[in-house]
Length: 335
Image 1 (cartoon, helix red, strand yellow):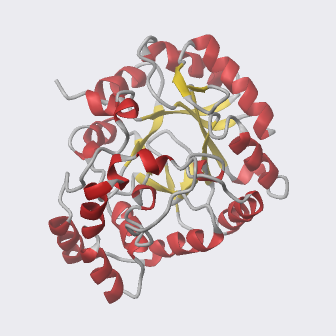
Image 2: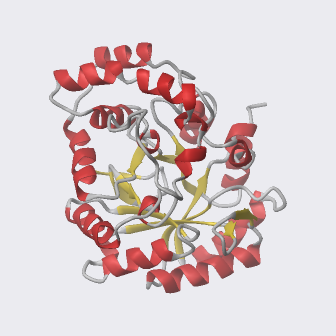
């Protein structure tokens, strides 16, 4: 497994990370034993970056990772944790809390659930519109000084927020959705990250399975799967989005690869400062995703892919309207 530094000030990480959300939340029921086996397989394959959120399964995802790490060396992995998104007992979403006192409270519970004395990268999941980002980042900076946090990250914020956060403390990376059909960050956000030496950890590289090559219009979603509310997975939008994959199938066939591997390889080809987070919940999907590391896309391959799937080719927003409203990354523009 190759490694690279996350941004100019972040830790050394495997070139691919594992996003753990689906093992506990958002995609319907998951198999806990298979999830732990997948975590073990990822670590054994050399993946060091494990990404979670304290609100994934209302803490259950952190406890799952703790269980998986019982038989592995915690110091060989990087724990990246998002905080701030609040849930109710019915699993609903009830806002974001980025107040300094809340930051420290969230971390206290996270450390206990994960069974560790520090978090490698700690980041607000979304911008709290009622709390200046300087205050939220300042609170995490206090935790860095105290030794509870090693690095500070951001998630789904725009250029003005990135600059303001960086003025308080060095930011290791921005976590943001990035895939062939989610390229909104390329115009303004990515250039600012590169200007400031901030890395990118890209989630949704397969657009939650939509561009994995495994999705069909006939697929039935289980209860609790948020894709049933996602604009890109519904009606005519779904048919259009699936039609975009034909060029990926052609290139995949020519390289004896899968559609998912080509889609991940495309993200990896966008720059050495971008670490894709693969959201595998099963060992077979993990193995498939790891195969992307051996694929070399030529300049011709990339041009062909981007001609067939240009920026803004996808039909439908990446989240439902209520969730889009919380994305600072979608609201801010340079100037």
